[in-house]
Length: 575
Image (cartoon, rainbow, N blue to C red; front, side, top):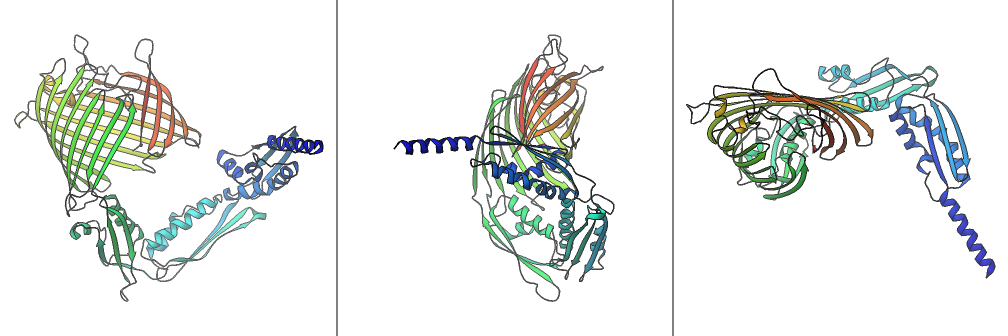
């Protein structure tokens, strides 16, 4: 019995020792991306916290490391790295260190492109060779080669060659010369064309469905245009499932019929949300959508948002027009109540708008009738305005949620005239812009600017919502929401005729989806020159969430005595 007890204690001690063994893996000489890839290949890194580590296993993993590092560096074009490795033990702690000199990069010495099939002399195919993301004389990067393969074949498919396939796709590395050859030999096959489109199911008017089709029978087959059709039908919200089924070609014309099988979505949708921003504090929202009032795709929706600063409720009736994905007529009724620094307003509005696209520009032409009640120092209190409005928006970005390269431009003009059912005459224009650019390997630069101007002979007749105020989360940080504007003799805010706001921010990716930010904002709402601009600066934390960037900032009001600090919390997409 005593011997058995001693054996149990010995085994327990051995288990405890094994469980306590750990490995620290250190890499020197690589940039961040290369280091991440090497660590993913290293067995000693993957197993460093395993419960069953022994000295024998640790040394075996260490002996594999040089070959694994060489393999991990090859995708970046480094085939002759120099690696110094060491393994040291300090009690139960092991340190595996690898000092890596990537060596000379492999250079692309030749690119051999060949075409066979019906498209071998098609300029749309042969001309694409000029835009390949690999060039003779550049460093070999396997990711660029794979991108070239994918893009090249996708471009051929989009020119009607549905059966295109590679006869040869290869990278040949000549280690002794530090050179590589790329060989892409493509058989295009025959060119195909769109045939008739047939719809099945979905419980919708077929004329409406055909307005989603971005091609005609007989057009050259394009995978991207077929995907555009599918996305349009999915994004419509009318259907829970859209299945595209190309059929065999009808005859020697090589026209491909397409059967589209549709499954109707639930008619009604309800949404509920809770949130927080420092402009409005805690917020709650309720939404309701009737996806299809009838077979012609008409929609009806209602939404309400409630916070301590602003409360609003609205309902919208939407009618799809000639191009239903981008061309919609909306009739909207709304009520909004807002209580900010020195300003209270209640706005009831009925608005008709035509939303449509012209090229890359999104345009909105609207006519609204607004009844507004204000508690504003120099206002008459009640105003009624018939306001035509036009808005043009252009957005281009690599990722609208969290961009590294993109911009947004928005132009808006509106006005009213006393001769046309209004209590004030004015003309107003607003320009808004935002630019995001990669800055360094791990950072991005975010810049934005807003400018607005109002022409009126009687500023006092303008209601609060047609005057300019600034300050807050998305304008000049460090200041309360809408707290920056001209004041009257009693120090009460009355708003301005003009607006100028600018901001520059640098976001640095420190780890995974986390960023550190530093920013400077400046701007003002004003009616006379010189401009008395207010500025704010601060630092923040960013998290790249699935719905866009979550931003937490601490900003100092540089134009106020003592530079008081203010917290700003916002979230949402970049564009």
